[in-house]
Length: 332
Length: 259
Image (cartoon, rainbow over all chains, first blue to last red; front, side, top):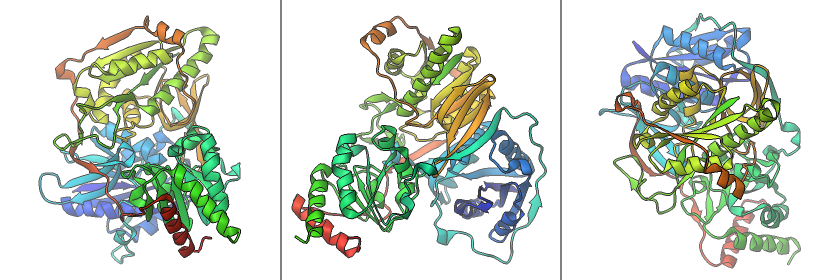
């Protein structure tokens, strides 16, 4: 029996939410193809995570538990994935579009000589020639393509949210079976993990802010950022955020970056000014309770997640808004 | 130290760019093209590494490689002006529609003949956003690799890189030579060529490589359709004069109790 192999991911010993989404997606693929779902958990001291997963999937759970697997290393994780691929005939291999997925999944696809579909946002399983069609966003999220793997085999990474939480597998009584995976790790790695470090000491914690005013490339330059974004943030008592191009260009320190590689925020209000809304930025702010977007381009992806939009020149709107708020604060 | 930099030429997407339904992509016939922004950061990182090594033993060489029709020569010329020492144009019309795996196969042949110490390329392309070419090439060429790096330095055995993870975390990884790394945006500030650089670039070599049709790999993926990205829940758009918009915004902020 062919299989859909899910390579799960742990953060601080717990399975990521995205891994449960992958299991839900795998079950849809498996039903469409008559395959079984096999999940792989890789790490050190992970039997509890394996048990948790077994309760939420009807399929098998392979456990690769080894003290050398606590930190991600490309060659070690690849060796484990290959051992799993020898044990099961995987039609699809699913991973999450995370730093580990980006690093490992394309290499697995190239090694298997199968299609790679990166950062898919949706899955369609139906009849017809292609039993599985994947949606992915291109051109920084402005366009969406539907992609298939005609040979019927692929390694796929999914963005978080590709399966909604309600579709996720529930606690079930016919839980899966946990099996130990045997594997051997390379004695000499050519890519060696040295250390992990964090830039948290930079002192900008956007995750606790109720209101965030964020600026993007559309603001223009560093001087204009200071002129229109910062005063509005002050008037709202808000924290100042930025998109990646702004910190890349050095207008603001990297500690202000909102996005999957920066800070992931959930404020009451997020005001996005001159931000087009690249996928990685949206991943960092789409769960804000209320999102206001101000951008001249009506097709900007930020409007996909915004509640309220102003398609206008932010250089006209923001100073007027700041002034109105200041007047109000002054009781006028 | 020889560094190969794979540079993609990407089409500019404008609000009026037509879509090509049959190809499942944008209509490239009238598009304007730019060098992929991530690849320029990779080029700059390569130049900084060889600048340093040239002072030591004078052996640094940056070779920039691009596949595509005649127009990609423009991208290669820009790279030579910025400071690459030599260029290879893998010539053909078939490359612009190839997926990452097929392109990785093409570039593996270039790696086999050039035998680089290091391959650098952008973390992803501005058009396809696949982020797959680099690691796939590393797998096929059997290179150590790391994706999404924000720092790189040469070491005795190879390179020490810093990978960007999530939430402001980074991971330091040592790679043995030969190595491949994909470069994140913002790792450096890409230099502008001076007039002298532009003139000097005219004397630099651009070799053309044409692969026999029988050796051309085929894509393992197929594009079925393309469309503007859909909305999760369409935003309410405010209209009116600046004053009208501002008063609507203030009313909304009131309602949200954030004032």
